[in-house]
Length: 256
Image 1 (cartoon, helix red, strand yellow):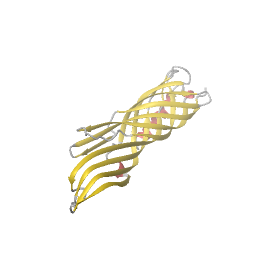
Image 2 (cartoon, rainbow, N blue to C red):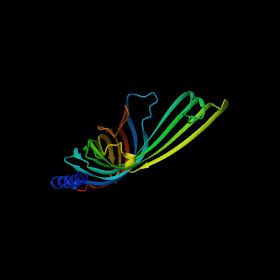
Image 3 (tube, helix red, strand yellow):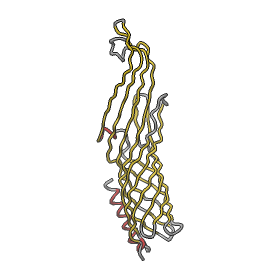
Image 4 (cartoon, rainbow, N blue to C red):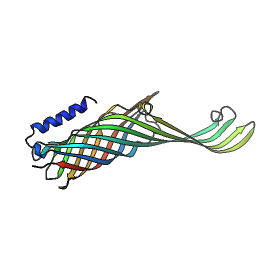
């Protein structure tokens, strides 16, 4: 990433230097929200699969608008993207004379309901270089690549076990209606060990810049590479990222 950022800036400066329309080059900053929707694939497909991760996050960054003509240009961007993905898994199991629940001290007959809720937070450094088409003044259509570098993250997991049934111990029976709760938190490398360090995406969107400089931007990102890849035993879980993003910014420059 240390090599990519200087190259990114150098390319923008060079384009401005050789561009005959450099007086119309614009700069700006933006702040917005994103909504993550994961595409998930688990092999072999389990009976009780976790839901695909979804969640609302934030972003902020800056951009440069470089026109090559009245219609065509590019819009290099750099931003920090904070993403959130929440998922849930429910497993309902019927038990008959089970000794594992009691630790070998009696038997349990009934149901065990397991609910897992995971809240995953990820921080990315995002580099976009979309082609920009301007069919009318102020309106733009954007399409191009997006490279996202994973900087860090954290994960919070809540697990709830609910037991309902009958405990048989020393020839006596007891009705059980019990709930156990466990919470775990991870941060740093342990929270992101199964995530890819770089996420390559395709981006498409539209935007509009008002004459006063207010900038509105809506776009969609589709992951081209696997974001998450975990193998445990004979099971493999993979997730691709889909991202909807809306940002409000302010544009400077563009004078003759």
